[in-house]
Length: 159
Image (cartoon, rainbow, N blue to C red; front, side, top):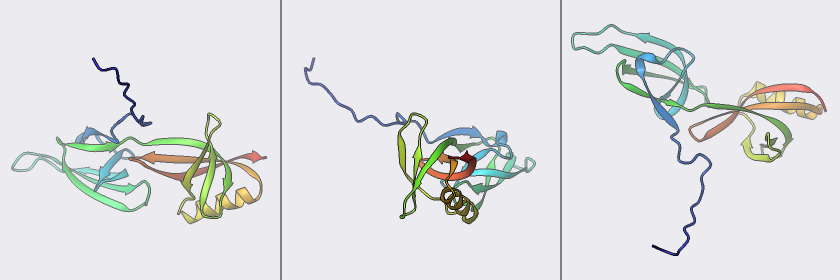
């Protein structure tokens, strides 16, 4: 055989898929679905009866989890839909830089510096005011399909 050593770049997700298939008829309200390539949270599902030619259809109304845009889709209930892998992680806020990025402390003691402040005005105001007051803040970061965004804030008391 070959005496050469092969070095491979390791990816954190090990090539895991960003979505998984799920039958449209089994997706419920408050679940997740991919519509037009965007990860969304389902706010309304209605199922039509089987028509003259067979398939019952599911009508999904969902809201994009990052942009809060409303999206709709109609899929035959027997077909598969893509469902995003959605993860929520809590990090402690260390610093806010002038250019709108935050510095977060991970569970293993490393820092995470690649996240922007949220675009939601009220959440942005709460984070900035809490940080200015010197409070210990924990932010919830939602990640799906290679995107991450701060979606919630918890105050764990003064420093």
